[in-house]
Structure formats: C-alpha cells, structure tokens
Length: 462
Image 1 (cartoon, rainbow, N blue to C red):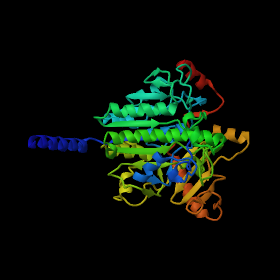
Image 2 (tube, rainbow, N blue to C red):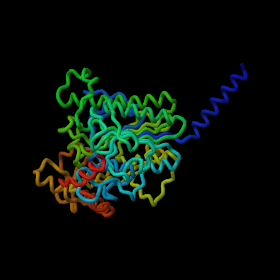
Image 3 (tube, one colour):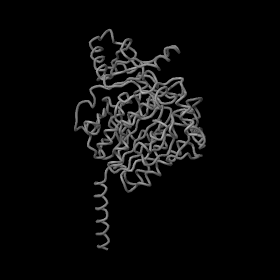
Image 4 (cartoon, helix red, strand yellow):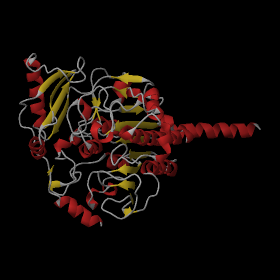
C-alpha cells in the first residue's frame, strides 16, 4: 500500500513538474462583425453570452480595446504580423481588388510561423481572408493544420465543396453538413484533443456574426420576443457563444485551463444596418474610423497568471496579441522585427505601470484616426453621396482637413467636435499622426469594381 502511494505521489509530482516546464497553450479566438455592445460583459441585455462573459469574469476585460482596421482583412493582417497593416500595403479587403493579386505580404513573418519555430503545433479553424492563392494559404504561412474557408464570407448552411470559396481541410475542398459555427466548434475541440500532450497554438477565427444572416435553427425558440434581423442575429451570436463555451470546457476537461492563454477579440465593429448588431454607446460602424468601427469586445484569460475580473481602461490594440503570445511562448522579441504591438501581461499584472502605447493610429483610405490618452482626432466616412464614397475607396488620406477632435473620456459617442476650441491639442495629435504615417506605404491594391482579381481567384479554385 505504501509503495502504491509512493508511486502515485511520484507520478503526480512528475506530472506537475512537466506541466510547469511545458510552454503554455495559446488560444486566439476572433468573432466577426460583432458589435461592441453585444456581449453581456459590455452591456448587452437582450442576448445572453455567458461563455464570453466568463472570459471577463476569470480574466481581463478591456474597455478601450481596438483593432487596427475597421473591417475584416486588414485587422487579420495586423493580427498575424503584429504590425500595422499599412506598413506593408494591406489597407483594404482583397475581394474585388484592383492592383496586384492580393494576399498577406510575403515580406511579413506570421505569428504561427514564429510559434511553430518555438516548438508549437499550429492549427487554424475558420475564416482566413488573407489571400486565396497557394502562397497565401494558411498552410503556407505557418499553420500545420487548417479547416475553414479562404474568402471573406460563407454560408452557414451550405457547405458544398463546389464553388469559388469552399470549406477546406488542408488544401482540399470538403463538404460540410453541420451549421458552420458548430462545425468550427467541432474542429477546434478535436484539435485540442489531438495535441493534448504538446504545446499548441489554435487560431479559431469564427465568421459569426458576419453575413449571410443564416439563423441557427435550434436557437430560434430562445428568443420569442425578438423579431426580424435581431432575432436571426441572436441565434447566430448564441451559437457562437456556445462554441466558445465548448472550447473552454475542453480546456477544463484536460486540466489545462490554467496553462492556456486565451485571447478574444472581434475583428471590427458591427455593421448595425446590415446584421442588426449593436455598437452600444459608440458612434459609427464597420468600415468607419469612428469608435463604432474600431473599438471592439476584447478580453484575455490566463488563470493563475492574470488577475480575475480585472477591468483595464488603457487603450490597447489587437497588434498586442501577437507580441503577448510570442513572449508567453518564450520567444525573444527582436528589434529588427519592428513589431507595433507590446506584451500586455506585465501591465495587467502590475509589474509595469503607465500606458502600453503613447498613441494608437489608423489609416483607412481617406479615413484616419489617432488616439492619444483620452483625445482622438478622426476623419471618418459618413453617409455621404455615392461619388464621395467612391473617392474614399480610390485614395488615401494626405492631409487632415475636415478632421474632428474629441475627448473620449467625456464624450464616448463623439458628438462634440473640439477642434476649434482646443487648437493646440489638435495640432499635437495631428503632428504625431503625420509622423507615424511616414512609416506607411501606399496600398498594394484598392477595392473597386474591377472584378479581375476576383474572377482569377474563382477560376483557380474551380
């Protein structure tokens, strides 16, 4: 009996020692077109999101969490590289582009590439949207496993292999019969099961709650008081939340929850008029540099390392996830990488004080923004005429004429322009943005009516 207990004690001690030596798993979750006000922890009242809320309860919720682009592909380019995407020309979505065949620049090193070199098993499930050609494929950019689709949008209920944007396993099209969010849930938990005994990085990039607005049928009865688009949105968001819950449950089942850094961010603000999302108190929506386009749900959990239930108000950006994950994996950050993100862990634990960033910056065609402390300059697209919107799509900002100045601490809804009242503050932020913009390049492609690139990509996939 004593021998058995001794052996058991030795086994437990050895297991704990191995767990302590092993690098932490890294789980990066993205939601798509997800409104700032559509998580319970951010004030949502009509759609329960208990699993997303658990990340805030057991980790850190950022009230000023931003993304570097106000729509899909630019944000993902910044996330994968840890650098402002305008540094390497990835300013717009690749779909329907005019210019070079678009995809994530080959000059950039991706997060999965760095983690793979550090001994991680790297997998991706979900929406890529960083190029369709072979050299841009996830398996060519550091991922060892891939299940998902390459384009910008996909039906949730039609997973046929035929077509220009099929569901793929690796490089091969496959048919998928499950509701797509449920399929991504299945594949994510299976990846975690396969790599239980080794450190892994999983990029779980949901396309929910992006259109097309395909309701998740089994959730319709949960929302008898909802109607129209908001009801459809509620079912899609609930399927997403349950999928997040299933993945977190898998971590608990394996006993690795405290050994996994979980990062959650939406790729941009909600396009409220399109998918019935809600950006809460923020002005604007997807594709705009108003707060509603760039401030998003943003959370981190690392039980036993990060404080639980912490609310962090300093401005941060999704570029920080790249650096934070790399440092957690034991990777030395080299100056020549010129990363724009920072490691957030010391700020969240209190070992570093001050602000992670002196300022955050945006350039999106003729739109721009800079946030420095509580102050923000923004030049954003409004409703406008068709001709004005077309011009915004063809060019990039060269001066700050017409830009507004806001104090976000007093005016989160960006209602009172202080540019004339605070000319010195405007001048200070404008000079900082102009200096930052010197480090950007012209867009490699522009969006537009030219469907040549889209037709070329379709022909190659079919």
